[in-house]
Length: 254
Image 1 (spheres, rainbow, N blue to C red):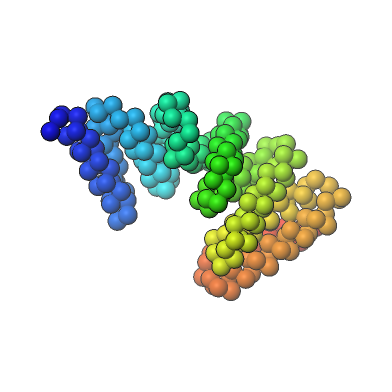
Image 2 (spheres, one colour; image 1 turned 30 degrees about the horizontal axis):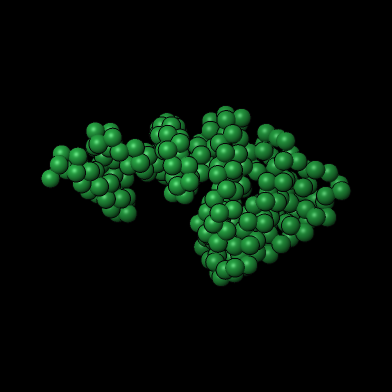
């Protein structure tokens, strides 16, 4: 067996081991394994494996709330991903990973108060997912990730402006989750995300002035109805309780 094949087999074993450790909740161990896998990927000059390794490590650090390290890792992942996109721009997997990495990078930059850079990341992710969905309109994974990115992008624009653009982004998020919900009305995740988008849109419209109050109220009332329905099915879900409190507060402010 050639030396390059041996290196590639070792790399695959390391990546598989890291994924197994993640599933078992052994995140520290997974990070150690990914460090070894990164060295193997660089030795094997396997750019696609290196991209996946950095993407996975960034996700672990993000989940562990190690935000500075996660941001650094995601930025390295974006550099590698950009090189891959140049060599294979039509690869849907690369595009999907890039979209997710850009969206998560936006979340991290927003936490650091770097609003302009965060907006650029969200906007780039939006473009990637728009292109992916245009080519794969039935892919619910792409559509769901697109909706999540839009919700986060809208929140950023509500905070930093422009407000008109924020409301347009929230409308796009509502449309995205509305279609997913219509196709699968039993999916509680779609219901939850749609209710959040409706509540966010209602809040945004309130800030646009008196002429939008009635539309804002309709969105908020629908969001509240959905959230209360979700709570009836998941009575211990603290996230839903928080969403209900926030939506009620927005309604009371009208």
